[in-house]
Image (tube, rainbow, N blue to C red; front, side):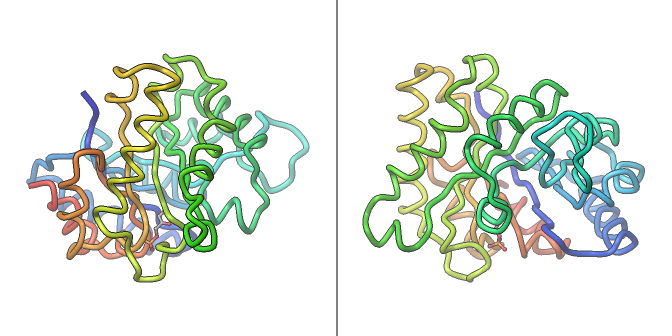
Length: 252
Ligand code: 13P
């Protein structure tokens, strides 16, 4: 059966010392408490090694926020999946809307990234979601289906089974405007049906689908109570230990 997961996406925030301090705080909060979900933090590349040294990965998973679409070579400034793996991290966010919007990521580059992440044993947290204009036109399901089909449906069922999905409506990211629990459930159920059509009911039922976009302690419980919402990918609220743990505790 699928896992419930709360994952933080720190984005481009915190210096290394600040990030190590935050990771330690979250690690300590988890030391004497058993959450009813997996907990993961995804941090900037520069933070992976030092954070890896201060957390207990049996309780707190560690991930990168991106990886390159090549294994190695003359790609100045890029960081590859084997490099991420060598830090000790085991997750990687791929296809975040900010990467698609500001850095031109396409389904084609994402197919390469997903393949490399899987080859190096990293669990992709693959992001999908429509922009406001697409929701206003009522085409959000088509957009999300295309994102999934074009970047992931070349995978075989075993590979697809290793993917975590994160539905992040772009209009809800960092805006304070959360999707309602009903809007999230409607899309998550659609995503699960889309997976079932391609890979069958078991693969669909086993896939964790997280919600992301202005998720906070005050709205997490209502979102996570929905049958197809299996947790959250948390931006702003993952930068404060108390807020992040408040979201983790929404599963209690
Ligand atoms: P916020 O929680 O800050 O809206 O960000 C969501 C997000 O983009 C997580 O990947």
